[in-house]
Length: 175
Image 1 (cartoon, rainbow, N blue to C red):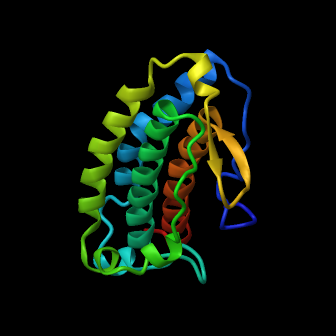
Image 2: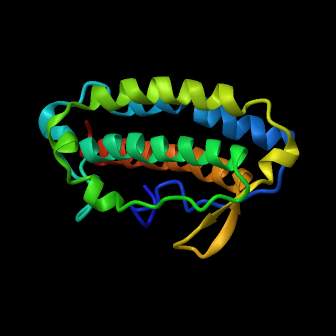
């Protein structure tokens, strides 16, 4: 287990463009639903309602959060490819994690959504050019332009980051 339970695989570190790195990150996007699904395999309701760390989200909230976040990301990716430096819409992920759908719906609803979403995401972006990976969006909270390439790496990291929250909790609790 890492020292800081908030970052079980470390913080996201951008990398320069390369075909090899692109394939790695695209495969992370492609296979994230299976990774996340495997991370919660055979957990019961009490385990799904267990926070991954003190003051953190529950396993259930993490799964629904990944779906919420990646739906937003997919739209951002498409906007970046079809508009000139669009301003991305931010959202309050903490408030989203407290909404009734997160509280009441089982995790398989978000997992099903992620399987379809990530299949579309991978297919839509696997063949775009290096020039297109350099297209940008303006992030109003960070007050800067961010490249599609940076976003690809960040979301490839993001899915693995939250799956690791769950697997580290399982290891800690011997589930």
